[in-house]
Amino acid sequence: MSNQYEVLGKAPDAEDLKNLSSEDIHLTIKNLNAGYGKMEILHNFDLFISKAQSLCLIGPNGAGKSTILHSIYGFTNIFSGKIEIDGKEITNLTPAEKLKSVGIAYILQDNSVFPDMTVEENLLMGGFIKDKTEESYQEAEKILDKYERLRNRRSQPAKVLSGGERRLLEISRALVMKPSVLLVDEPSIGLEPRYIDMVFEILGDLQKNEKKTIILVEQNAKKGLEFSDIGYVLVSGQTAIAGRGDDLLKNDDVGRLFLGG
Image: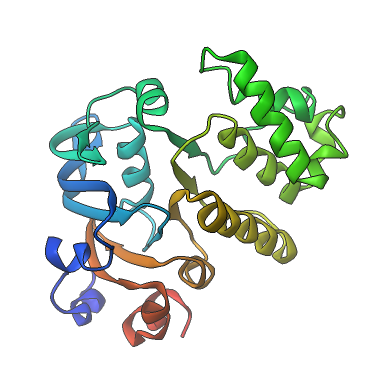
């Protein structure tokens, strides 16, 4: 790793990170070493986030940002460490078990809607993993009531949607599962500016009004930090800087390295 990161000084420890959250810690990662196959990407990684808080992970490509989301969801090899929700250890549960027992939903960065299914059918796929079909229908109706863009196209194939509407559908499909934690990978990727604003407005509504805990990875560091309560800057699988989103936006090192300042 080049010397440019030496300017970042002492990395935050677990206590520093904990201080960025309130007493009501919802999700905790302690001393996590994780990766793919035998390759370790995260090294002694810690994370603390409270209920209805948002946390943005920024950093260069390959720093381990998506690996954190993958580890929480159950897509990585975890060599050591713990992941807990409300004090309950979930480290080795499968993604399906995590969704059912503690309500973790993952919104992928790639286009994951089913283009030939209708908007409504796509929404109902969100509830497919849950055994309660009736509940899925009720949740889908609530979402269609809330988002006029989807309601107007409920019977049309998803391929007619704009990029922003598709991202809204991806987020909404996760909501059918009634999650408490949303893991969002690159919400702004490939979107026009007006749709980026719309997606962040929706995420803000979910955090403030529906009390969702949101952890996101965002290449657009400025947008991600403007949105989030907390930001972690990752370098080589570890947190180099952490702070309130607003404070990181004003941090000269973060600005120079990631905000084009």
